[in-house]
Image (tube, rainbow, N blue to C red; front, side):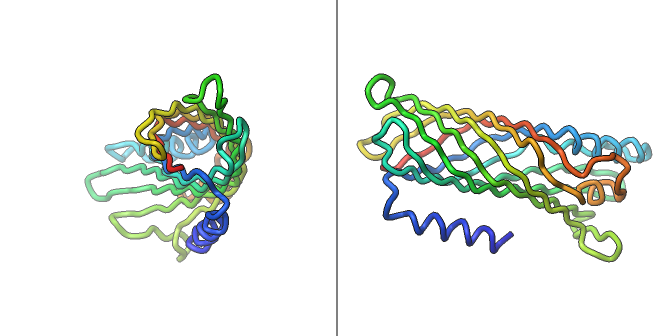
Length: 222
């Protein structure tokens, strides 16, 4: 995962001299992964003795960095790197069970902004390679399964549509609130069930689809 992050930063730095706009944003992120929800629900159903149910992996935050090339055109292109984090925590009398889910995306942006009619509004269409790592901690220590550290790595492709509205702050810097709707049609995650429920094949599939929504604010440098 660290090597992947360093690779993404290297790619962005390579295009720095070409880029004319840098965009940094932070947002609240919601995901709906039906198959993962079933795994967590199976975990709760099979442990009726737990006083508190394990929450679903739904609510998290996202941060991203984008480079837009030639933003003065109505349609321009760019690169995007984003990180997302989700946490599910349940406390019982004798233990605390935490699920930590990390996403890392590398995307290509098609940026639309009508420079004559509606300069404040913009739309980004993003195609991305997305990967994730799911970790489980029990009482603050990494959980082990079959004498190995419990981790589930996943990979897939993601499509996002972002709509934003620019609020002028200065000549070269401004803020923009935005919303995002996204979709991952096939996210290969063969070990997620093992990490969450210590089973394999009980909930059938080794992949899931994910629906995504975000709301946040971006800071632009031109």
